[in-house]
Length: 371
Image (tube, rainbow, N blue to C red; front, side, top):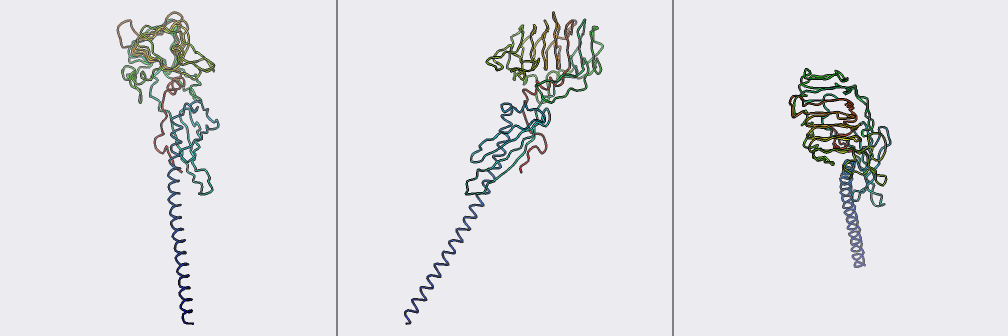
């Protein structure tokens, strides 16, 4: 009997030990599993936050390809969905002003039935990094200037452009800005606030060379159309297979309305003097020498001329802003808005042309917010 009692006690002790060890093993497993899941959750949170951030900057990088520049104010947002590693991300972009956008990103892991869905959100406010250029007036000259015959310089700002949706015209600027208004000549029409503005900045070469985040050299480096010295050009939109054909050097976009080339506005660099002989175009025109406008040519955008701008037979229209540095400042050799040439101020046209080549950057301060 005593032997059986001892064997029964030993069995009970063994069973108790087995149960205790099993319980400890289960408890240890649960602790390890909990720690693993917490580590996994922290890792997923980091990955999801990184995916949201990457989604935002990916949309900034691809802004033009995704059509952010054509997005109208108050339009529904552009929605972009992408995979970011094992996470998914959705970015919604809305235009909040002609030069700013608000982006919001949501990232998550797809449901697998094995782990809880992790969601992270982030927002980003971005704006166009526009150079500080446009001159002091419709026409800004570094030395003397003449407006003769039927020539006109108009500082009233009334023109909008599809290049910058939502842009509203300003209240107007001076007609002609120059360092010494006693050096003006001619009896042509000049209107603006005031018509003639005397400003020492007009006489500074930096006005024609340095534009905030840009310069003459950086703008020239962006040029996609190059003209030889003495070129005579009749620009016009070129459409091939229903698309704007930017490979044609005389295609300077469509500035008269809609069409495949309505949003094409190249940077054009003339390595010497150039004549616009009829035709039309838009963008940024940089001229190393003189610009002569003839036969009703029309150009919308920013024009910076290292020497003079002049009217030729039939004149034309320059709409936006014109800066003439008059580097060969000798008697009788100055910018001359003569018969048939009209220079009109259009702030939206200038900003729209610059916006086609400006980079998107975050607003200063609290531009990026994780959520």
